Length: 398
Image 1: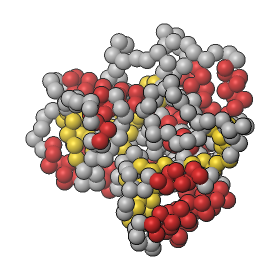
Image 2: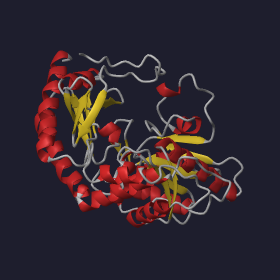
Image 3: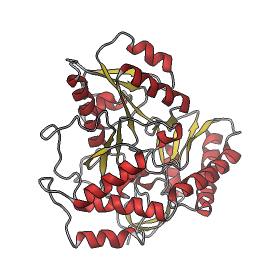
Image 4: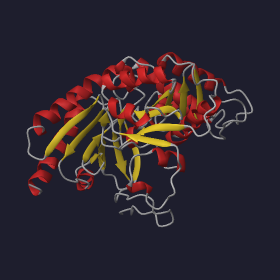
């Protein structure tokens, strides 16, 4: 019997595909009617360890049998354990835990404003970027550079200065002589913006400018962090340290975990009463974060992301980069985008029919962010499905 994929009682907030997923194992998932798919999306860079991981699953089952939630009136030992690990991996000093990337980015914006007020700035301003995406709350929406998703929600919150990516002179021009600037807020690699990386030289130049001007450098690593590019955090390829770093997505391998990691300049801005959360840092989420990092280290998943990411990108470049209609193949590690010259949302549906989960972002970019456990053989399998789909699309739209 066919089980329909329908959600008539939930709000119509997503353009859902006609499938309902039932279960998964490793890099494969099955729908409610038994069809198998290769997961090239990982729940949008969330399922770091794939599905039903043999080390993560029993650890979460153990935690559920002990305690799922405790409010933050009390110390939660795994909060400290996860915070200490993130401090070790990042070179920063303190962590605030929440549940989502939006919350982490919202907290970062609050930190920047409080930082400005502490300096005597009445109306702090934050530099943000074209094509950026930081969330859908009113503050993160205002910071986001996608005008289409802002429609109908104005007026937007004030206090943002928008600049183009990878243009240090544009940043200087937009801020020169402005005493209200408190922070620069960017994604190391823009995810929803079409897998757009900030260049290493640019990251270094922004770090230097923030130091000279006494601004916070805030780097949104929600999608590109947690080993996805082959380093724990994508900005580490530039050898810099941010002052504030929001995290989420892959941190809990599917269990909702968000975090704001801060360095000395920002770590003590929040004091009791300034910020908080009910669900953030609960025992289940913290166990998921602790175990995710432990398994990533044990299984060498950063090295795997680098190796398999190069392998997959090479296969895509070999078969696609020379074709008319393919603008660019870019990204790093297991965060890859194939930009086409024309809107290609239909490829998402066709990939689903062919047994591959992926997404199309910024209208023209096919995005691949598979679980970090992917093998070279599975990468070849992704390429073998995707390449013909793109070639067929290009032939139709030639």
